[in-house]
Length: 305
Image (tube, rainbow, N blue to C red):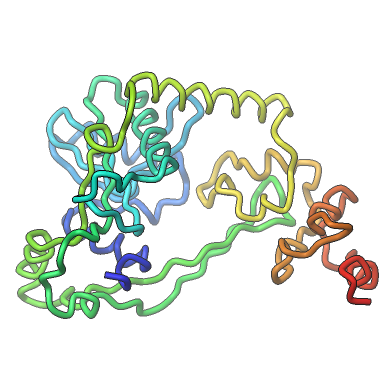
C-alpha cells in the first residue's frame, strides 16, 4: 500500500485500467485543440471515457484526470495518490482536494450546462485489505520522459516536467482483461462522491464561492493587481505546458526576455539575505540571473564569511 500510495503515476495508471478503454488526450498540448476534441467526443458519444478531458469556460481552463460520460451525466474523476480511510468517520478529505474538484465541476457545468455534472475523488483506501498477491509488481516505471517548453511570452523562461512511463505487467498478456477485472473487483482505490460524504454545507453556495474567488483573482491579474511575485513562483501551477495564455508570464511580464536562471539554484528557495529569502532580494533588484549573484555578500549575510 505504501508503494502505491506514494507512486502517484502508478495510481493514475491503475485508475485508467479500472476505467479501461478511455480515449487519451494527454498528448495534445494545444489547449484549443484539446478542448475541441473533448467537446466532439462528448457530443458524438452517448457513453465515453476520456483521459485528460479538457474544458474551457468563462476564462477557466481545466484538465480532468478521468471523465466518464453515461448518457446525460458527466462524472469528473480526480485521481489522488494520498490514501484515506473510508471506514473512519473523521477521515476527511483535505479542503484543497475538494476545491480542486469543485473548480473542475464548475468549469464543466459552464461548458455543458445541459448535462448533469458530478464530482468524484478516486484514491487509495487504507481501510481496504489488498487481496491481490504481488500487486506492486504489476506496475513498473520503465523510463522518465522529460519535456521542456519555452514560454512564448517569456523567451528566457522555460517550464519543464517529467512523466514516468508506467507499464502494466500484463499489457501484452492474452489474459489482460482477466487481470483488469481482478483490479476492479479487488481494487484498493475508492471512488468518493465528495458531495455525499466529504462536503459540509450548501453545495451551490460552495461552487459560487469558488467562482467568486476565481473571478476576483482573474480580475486582479487582468488589471495588474495580482499578488507580489516571489521565489514561490518557481512552482507556479499556472505555468502551463498547454499552449495559450500563461499565468506565470502574466505576472512576470516585466522580466520578459530576461535570464531567470536563479530559479535553478539548488535549494535557492531556502537561502536567506538579511533574514529574508535571497531570491526575493534578487527579484526586488530586477534580476534573476545566476551571473548577477554576489556570492561574497550572500555568504556574509548568512554568517559564513
